[in-house]
Amino acid sequence: MSTSILSLHTDDYRTKGLRKQLIDSLAEKGISDPLVLEAMRNIPRHFFLDPALDKIAYEDRAFPIGEGQTISQPYTVAYQSELLNITPGERVLEIGTGSAYQASVLAEMGAEVFTIERQQKLYDKVQKSYPFAERHRKLYFFYGDGFKGLPQYAPFDKVLVTAAAPFVPQALLDQLKPEGMLVIPVDEGDAQRMKRIIKKADGRLIEELYDVFRFVPMLKGKNEQSRK
Ligand code: SAH
Image (cartoon, rainbow, N blue to C red; front, side, top):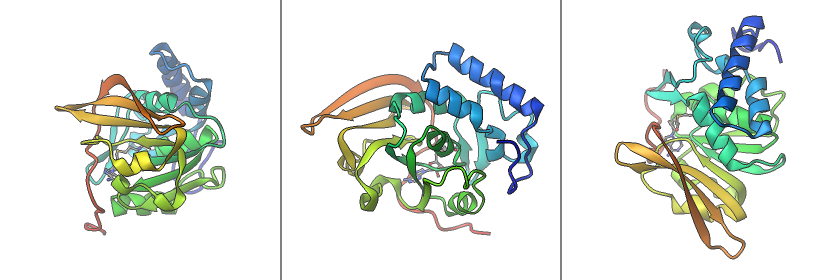
């Protein structure tokens, strides 16, 4: 993958080099799923950011993407992707499309991805100019409220929430297949505890606790205003 026709970005030796360094640092921080590391090596993160940020796109930090939202930190994307334990071909629901970088990494890992965004401007943008539309034919964008999930496309093997959830939405649990899992950062004061909830074959739920992160809030309803 070299140049995106739809964007002003190119992926040259410099961005490739910076990306390799970033991925190596993620491996040093403990990310070990080869599917995650390979996907993040393949997807140029700077394509999802303003061209003015090309030089710093490979720092391990979040950046603004407009509408008061952010693209998650690469470590967080890697961490959540690893917890999902993806097998190619699985059907994954993501809440919080944002820049579509996380969705792109999941699609690159071979998942069929259904991703929902509540901010209309962000949805319009990715819908129109997703840089790897040809390559990721099984990545689908939706405008809606992630608290409701996507019942018409359920059940899902995996569900990923990429915004700070005030609680675990029942609809998302309902839309999981037996043996499926939900990865979700849940509010705990001013930060969120990463949780992985596994639905057993008999419907029982097992909750696992992981590290603490900081996400932008998961908000109810759709935001249709401020369309320019
Ligand atoms: N996965 C994104 C991270 C975006 S930040 C990326 O890789 O860039 C979280 C996103 O969740 C924001 O864009 C925010 O608008 C969106 N969001 C918040 N609450 C939501 C909800 N209820 N339904 C859908 N999207 C929501």
